[in-house]
Image 1 (cartoon, rainbow, N blue to C red):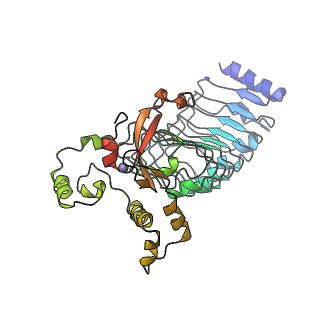
Image 2 (image 1 turned 90 degrees about the vertical axis):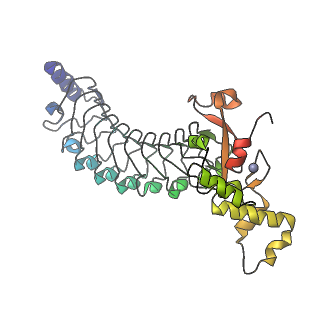
Length: 366
Ligand SMILES: [Zn+2]
């Protein structure tokens, strides 16, 4: 095997190969032949998946200065050296399925990087320097232990595909909505309880997957008409039984929206104050357009006044106007015309409700 490896590399060096395939070679150290003398100055793509590497050499960029793609999927890499930042031409880096616990800030110096794959490692956080990757289009962070997204991620303005499935995210920073080229956002199997209300405002964002976030019940109304995967969300609302405090409050606070009535029952969800305010204003406006002017010193910005005239949707159950948040009633996508759009069978489509109360009483036949 050693001789074969030696010959492969010797040949690549002699014949100035641009691609070198060293997958499945049982390597536990980086082959010295790649780093000897002047290295492989012409090499652009290096494939080394399914070996047993634990780190990378410090002089990688000196010896392989023209590397564009580096595939290290399925090794045992625990740490990558700061010198990784010297691979100035690198566009694609695959470190999926390794043992990384942290990533050095120098990753942010890979200014040509377009695809970064880090799924199935043990990352608990990421350096904010990720935000320096202005050309980054794909970022795969699935199956790590991230509790939050990297600070400054919103500066990656070329980002089109962000995958953070199977982590420990409890929230998504609102700045994610500033990623105007983002087309697919996948955050299945996290601990999300809510999403930023302007998520989906960008036309580019077409696919949002939030499956298996059991405490997530509402979706931002901007996700209307997008492909949404959210089966397995809001399961805990099924368990809305016997909350005696909730029932007491429900009886005491007649006249308030259903959500507010059941505050105190940890299994239910509460409509955001912003949404309640908008609905109240809308009701006043609807019944008496001049009514808003009778409420000095409240002066609404023009954008809010416009929003009051044109709600983002109406409840499929009770027809109440909705402004910032909707409650989706899910049906498997395979039963709808959108079935062919995406191969993930857990994708669902949706009737929208104004509250968890309407959601519970929604009935397709009814
Ligand atoms: Zn309703």
